[in-house]
Image (cartoon, rainbow, N blue to C red; front, side):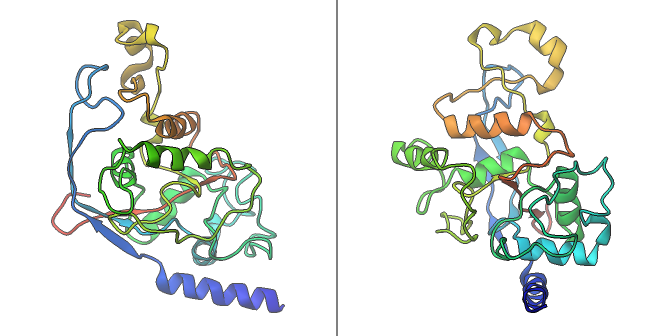
Length: 260
């Protein structure tokens, strides 16, 4: 009973503090994914200003969500919206259990569930470009992607055992004031199903690839961005109802006066 009372308090605190967003100015940005008409050439795109949650959604925040929206509890969610591993680490539909800290990022959540959570607070999932734009920053620079030291630090995360317990959210923030874009969990993006890697050089610019795979068949411009490639490969392999024990999410909002 004491553990459940503490979790209830954590849920109330999470609900009170949910929606901690940081404003990003937007601007011209060149993705590792081609954005122009030619599938092997990238062109800078204009990223509209937006606000992003400073940290991934936590277990405590998600507990508050499923308490307010019981249709998303693991015992009640429709199978079409979440596979059987949905919230598999939770003790029950309304109790994450003692093994999960309320401050750790929620995982084992489907794209449908993440989308519903964001919509419940007037937000949405970020697009890939928005996520990549925010994640390009380190602690002092808004675009540190060319720094080999940053790349090594990010890649070190992939060397950690997948079974290691997840840390609490709130690592050092980047230049925008956003934490944990690297080194904690993978994250859903709204347009995950539009990401498709054609990594074989023999397919570069192949019109048949585009004919069979449509607009989703894209090529990587900067192949040195291995960590980004890994993230895209994971997301492009998923269905919207899928879940994994290392996949979480965060939400974004348009700034006042910009389209949603």
